Image (cartoon, rainbow, N blue to C red; front, side, top):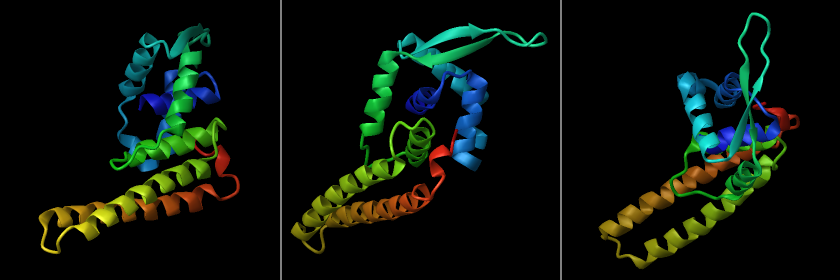
Length: 177
């Protein structure tokens, strides 16, 4: 969640309510369960870590001042590292989806290139697992586990194909903003 919030701030400084709305929009139905306080707790932690700074913006006459958060140089570096990270075999699909949405919204990276980097990593791991399966005896319980890992990687590859189809469509670069 921290990295997704940072990436959303890479597009423009924002207050917590606007960030929460953007995250919910990017996650669709999965975002409905997002606790309102979660974004504010995350922003507080990011501020303590020196990844964001908080400034007060004047509110309207009938509303209080709002805190507006912006990235620090350290926050910008962390966003760049997060976008370059390839984290499988235990992906958090919602986090990867937010990575694509944030990268496109802030024009930090091409989502299709991020999908391609994940695909290359999965194909490398699948090849390793398939070699290990072939080295196991047919009645091996370890071979059964390896077969399960291979099936999971194949399913993840199919999901990445779906991601690529969606993010390759014209006009997808403004999604999640």
